Image 1: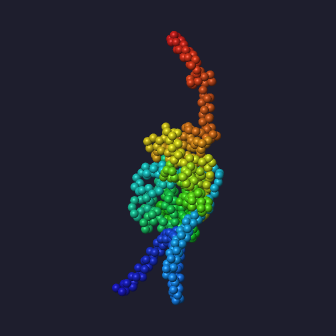
Image 2: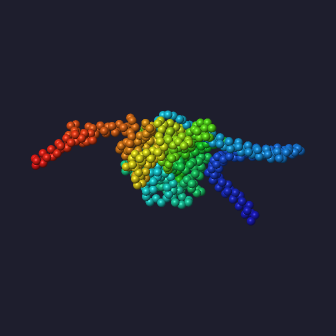
Image 3: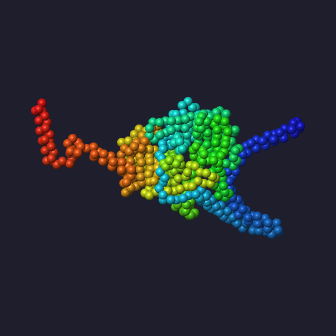
Amino acid sequence: MGRGLRVGTPVLLLLLLGALGWYASYATTVLVWELRKLLPWLLAAALAALLGGAPTLARLLTRRRGGRGPVGGSAVLGWLGVAVGLGLGALGLVYGEYLQDRAYATTMRVVTDPVPELTPRAPYVVGEAQAAPNLGDVTGEISDVSYLPDSDRFAVLVERRGWLTGYEVGLVQEVPLGGNSRAQQRCRFDESASARIGGWFTHNLGRKIAAERRGARFSEEDAYVHCQGDTPVVVVPLKRQTGILVVAERPAGVALYDGTTGKVTVTDATTEVPGPSYPISLAARQREGTAAVGGFADWWFERSGWDASEDGANEGNESEFTLRYRDGSARSGYVTPLTPQGEASSVVAVSVVPTRHAGTGLAPLTVHRLSPTWSSPQALAALIKAEYRDVCCWNDDQVFEVVPTGGTTWTATLGSEQSIRYRVEGRGQINGREATCLKNADGTLVRCAYAAPGSPEERELQRREQEKQQDRPADGGTGPVDLTRYTDEQLAELNRRLADEVNRRLKER
């Protein structure tokens, strides 16, 4: 028994050390990330303990030297030190939050230039709703739906059922605003590629990524799938931590998970990825950091910066709209309508962060101030329902996302989750009212409740009116006549002439 114990103990220790080394790359990464986040709290507690324990320590040292310290006075000083320590710690935590927002806002630039022209797309909730009907015989569960601006497609990632399993299939489908095209591509994961985000033990994709790049982590919302031929590839934008007392995140390359071989590749060539390579969660954090555009007092009393518009009209996708630029440059950005902090709900600015960014620093954040400003998305939705009540909103039809599309324009889509029928394009408040025009889903102008002066819609309506005038007969003999312009005497004369003509034709028969 003793010999077996002596032999078995080292073997057991080796196995434990091996298991620890195997798990270390992932476990230590998680541990270090969480401890760095808790460091300001730990320092605050240490400061309170130090100040509170200083009188007691002084009294103990005095007694060691043969003296006597006032016990009651030490207790009072101790409690006072604890209170001061907690106060300083709380102040440090609050000021640290302000400094953290400042760290994310270092690349922010506020301009009065118009928002770049952007291409409207199908609403995110529509792309999500149309994923399930097109999966066919797939038995798994949808875990992620993302928009790929490069190809104007929605990508759907489906998990295989079971505990120790990975993904089942990737679906990339077109959800057009106009037309009936439903182009789609499905690529299946091999069962040997059995890792997924949040999986168990060896089936955890985060563990595989940590083995390739220690210290890097990611947010689940940043990952998406695309089909490289018949091979599904899961793209995971990575992040790293910087700073000690003020801890912030920065991009750290991209991990690519091959759905056929199960191999993970980490690359810093982020511009070559066929889709967004900059983490959308990091873009959102940068946008939140705009609250620190002013001083500490302005940040504390919420007198500076902007918030994402969250009045319910864009429910399901309120910020970081992934939109393509209209200039044909293949660029795209995370675009968010912004409202002032406080009770105001009008949209006064639009933030833009590129979806691709080279290097390991923060991508530039540009805040475009709007002039004129817009009403809130909820108010715009109510306006659309009032001005176009004949097309909205019946049965399951509704107003979907109200998103910026460049310059001073916004676009809202109308229809159901399975069929987009119309879009409403508008411009900010012109002469005290919103200029809106109803168009078919493909962009063909139908009519305008109020066309903005000098806008393309106004010119199109004027052109149509001129064509109508040209189509009318020059002599006015057979064309339609506006009878409301006739006086009573003229109408009587017209009626007499009409009766005479009818009688003449009857006699000729």
